[in-house]
Length: 100
Image 1 (cartoon, rainbow, N blue to C red):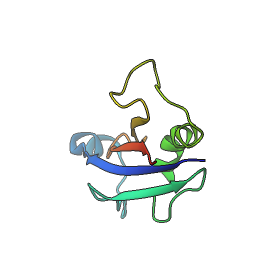
Image 2: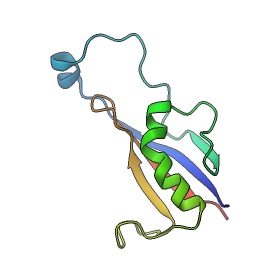
Image 3: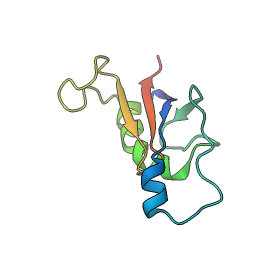
Image 4: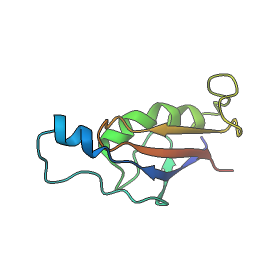
């Protein structure tokens, strides 16, 4: 099984949507742009957001098992994927890459 590197590429925040729809919360995302995690197959890396893991884990598993070329040429590197977490108020984009 191959290792997969996850890099936090971008964090967004939609204050207009937060103000209009979200109940106040004390704590949101702790991830930092540029932060990296190494996946050993199906195991969620320590410190990685549970909610974000739900979004990226199917792609991590596919890449770890040799999957490539998601959606017929979507990525320039067929052994990678750009996936965002499912937080509609504070989405985070992750680059997933197979390590040699």
